[in-house]
Amino acid sequence: MNSARGTALITGASSGIGLATAGALADDGWHVVATARNPSAANALQELVADRPNVQIRELDVTLEESVAGCVDAVLSERGAVDLLVNNAGAGHRGTLEQLGDDEFEKCFAVNFYGVARVSRAVIPGMRARSRGRIITVTSMNGVVAMPFSDAYNAAKFAVEGLMEGLAPVLRNFGIDVSVIEPGPVRTSFLRNAGGRITDVAADDPYAELLTRYNGTMADLLNSGESADGVASVIAAIARDRSPHLRYQSSANATAIASRKVIDPTGDSIVAATSAFLLGGAAAAAGVGP
Image 1 (cartoon, rainbow, N blue to C red):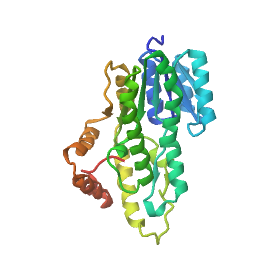
Image 2 (image 1 turned 90 degrees about the horizontal axis):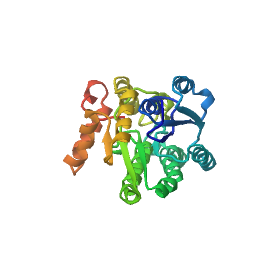
Image 3 (image 1 turned 30 degrees about the horizontal axis):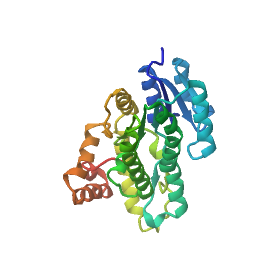
């Protein structure tokens, strides 16, 4: 298979959406540089490479400037260009403001915001010099509608949305298209990999009961959510689009959630919907994503 579409760099490709996107873009004709913080432990990614010669693996830790610079420089040296960047690396985080210290906010932002900014900044000069390129960033419904007990994660994803929205009109002048994709609940290892307050909450924590209900509701939603392959197919379609939008959602449900921001400028319906998640069980069925 050739790489007629160019070279795509994907962050956080060891599993989930990143892994599925590596396969989807490779099958669509891209030469894919799939990155992971620990490639030797990325067994599923290694299996993907074995079946697709136009996928290569590189080590990349988006929280370290030297790792980002080394990876991007190596790709530019070998391939001549990064034509498409897919910012996918990220990690969930649980906890409400009173439960979290500044260190937890910093840890969450290090991956979910600064990692995105750092990798994007590294590839933009080359794209700008060639007057072409695409940046697709995987955000979340949390970047559109804030969820309970996700304060640091919400803040980081809102920040990424703002970063990309501000970049889009500027970079368009240099032939660079900027898009974000906002998935709803996806069947991945989101909860297993999330930091913050998942299970380690003291019994006398005033938020313990609410958090337990919320975690149960979200576990059910994630188990019944859309597939990583479905999200990857949307990313591949964005990469093919000659005139891409700024925002995409990965499902009709996600689009309905995002539409609340436009339909109700007061925000009251959003608070009503997200409050249902604190009731547990079927009461949350009409709510929004993780």
